[in-house]
Amino acid sequence: MEIKLKPVAWVQNSRTTSLDDDWGSVDSEIILAEDIPESAFQHILDFSQLEIIYYFDKVKEDKKLYVRRPRGNPDYPETGIFAQRNKDRPNQIGLSTVELIWHRGRSIGVRMLDAINGTPILDIKPVYREFLPAVGIRQPAWVSDLMKKYF
Image (cartoon, rainbow, N blue to C red):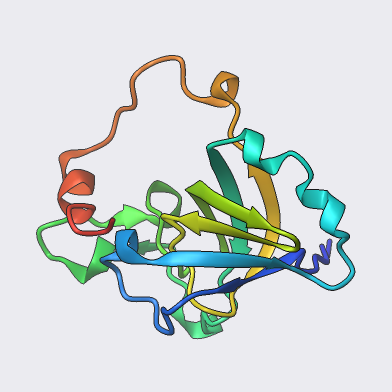
């Protein structure tokens, strides 16, 4: 089966490479694709956070791994791709929960988006409190270490 998607928007920011840390200092503008009407953003400012689904269009086919040590760190366990959030994924799809800062016409401003300049956006969804986990989140200790400088 083949699935075809087309971007609904594009990222504009100062990051041109996918470095692993310091994403918290990057503000991004998300600009609607020409065929998406401005009205798609109607009432978006009623929400504080959004989920941004995007496509890692710069990942090379030969970079995809199904098991690896996160960031190649020998202190971390060999971990399957579905137990980490690496960009080198089978379908190259990224997901970030971002803070919505502003809305102007065909653009929104967001913070905490770990996507580089020019990244195609596949979808934008508001965060509903009711979709958040009702119980605490469980994760291994190495994840907290890995994320210390991410945002």
